[in-house]
Length: 95
Image 1 (cartoon, rainbow, N blue to C red):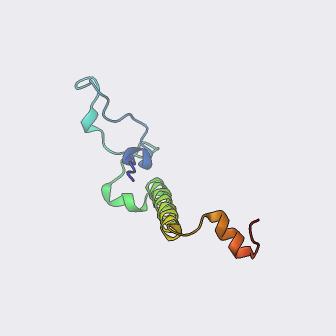
Image 2: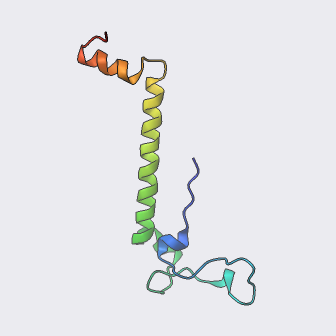
Image 3: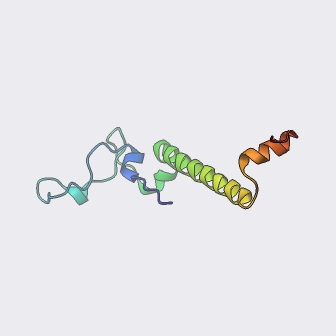
């Protein structure tokens, strides 16, 4: 699984980053990271930044859910199908 997250978007930056084909027209590589309010966001402030934390929480939650699904699939591998397991668990026998 590969997950890509834009730090500029997580911080709330509204200016476009790295526009192709521009060198002098737009200062692609000279834009300081800023929040939604236009104020600079310092590197040391990123761990406590609300937007960055929200993105990190969302990504880590998705990874945990993905791992849990994978673990369940590995446990069920080689076992009867999910329907057969449900029938066995309820004590009902298929016809």
